Image (cartoon, rainbow, N blue to C red; front, side, top):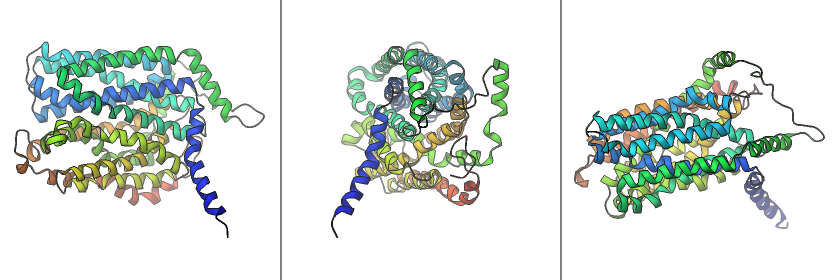
Length: 470
């Protein structure tokens, strides 16, 4: 026997990993614009979110509970806005949707930044109410923005590049989410949190300019044509999906959307709602981890809590494309079970106590689990959506995320005040019990997916043109 088989096997593995990247590298300028704004918005959104609770504490005099619930209004509001505003993308197009949404977010972030100077501090006082007004603009903007990104990936990719396209969008958003860990500490020390927020307002304005230039109408048309041509069978044009919205009035489109909401599909509803428990760990990234790392740790961790709070995104940036390349042919439902279990399990490591090694183990293992299931879920929702309904399907698919943010924001502040309070000696904290409870909550998702597997697999959709099981 020679060593040709092992070498051939190794080459096949390398090809399986690298080919999706090669295919994606041949995609369009319009898709580049979608990915670029995703990365910059990841920087801005997560950069603000990491500091927002502390900003409310220090500049507006809010306690942990009120600060957490105010952030819950922002994060949950974004998700519920997607449900109602996702259709905007389908009606006005991706370019206009991105420009309008970014403009709304720029205005909202500026209002939040100046709110402490315009009113009295304290819960529900003038400054707090003005900040909520700014948050309202951010909510409106993001409700349009996020569905536009995934509609863009669906429009600008083909059968070969779709999986990697969704994975790269998610990865680049997380790369942006990591950057505040590097940029925020020096900016905060030099200009305080308000100065950091003005920096993010400027980034949002830059995004508007870049989208205007890169995603021109001509570039979008070329990208759509390229995607259709790449999917075309040999010797013929790619068949167009039937457009049931063509020629319909606004009223008729609205009625069509209401009629085709997937709320009657019990499998779809169970699938998205059973993910709520494990998704609480996402919310803890900004509702709990910043305070946990700044209060329960000392030295380098507490001094640079933004870095550790935003380490998950850089791990996701590297892990997601690799996992996508290796698992592109794997069953979606199986990946969801495995990914949610891997994501939930390291929460129990934090229950061992606030040590550097337990924090790092949690962040790494949780990120691996997230990379396994989250992009696949987003791709699944986009692909089962009928033509011209991607935006609204993405909004509906995110509805449980809305509930997650609401519920987690309601109790996270209470847990912090009772298990990890501010201005308390570290030896008197009880973060172990807090994370143990959070771990049991997160495990509900993989257990629920396993228990319902037989029922779910009978009619589990993989594309809107398919009715069979995955």
